[in-house]
Length: 258
Figure 1: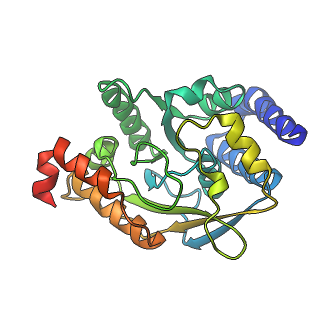
Figure 2: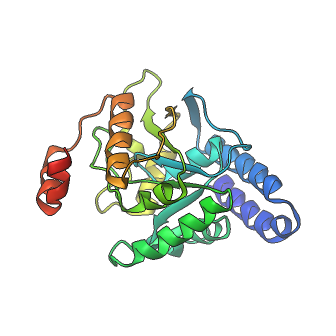
Figure 3: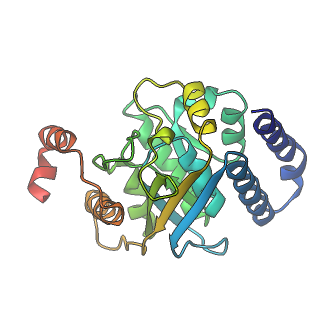
């Protein structure tokens, strides 16, 4: 825990003293190294499958399944991007401040109109060659299933005609079995989740980078369904049937398209 706090403080120093004076590319390299060191402190070993885009790839839109707050640090340890995160994260001590200063976009999911504001920010980032990542499930799962993908935050990819990179995430034990200690679900507090992670001797984090999906001529809903299918297939996960039925009731047009 002490080493973790010191690492977070190092991040604060880098943001305050280094970021204002270095190029955007150098910032990405610093973030990349900092996130990899963070995972090392937490004894999280990355097992990567597929080909991850390097720092030379621009206007990249990543979609991934969501299990834990660790997902953000895991993906940033592979390729730093701007994340869309729930508004509550902004209030987390140190972590929220660092997330804000490194380009995280915060969305208030209790306010329907806030999606339009965040979509405008995503579009601006993609248009300038930046890279963005979202979790279209809108919430976390324990890793044993895949929740329905929501399409609302995919509109900027359609607007910018930007390819979507579907990334599948899974946390396992050494033998490949699911490690549920990483799941940040239900009413669990961040502190409880952190101590569960720290109690693990080793956590293996698997990331599967699938082939990018073209957005040309497709609607955001079609893209959400395609990305969901790709990620679910990569992880061999079932979709939550109850949530799918609820989605069909609330969104009749989805039923027609399926």
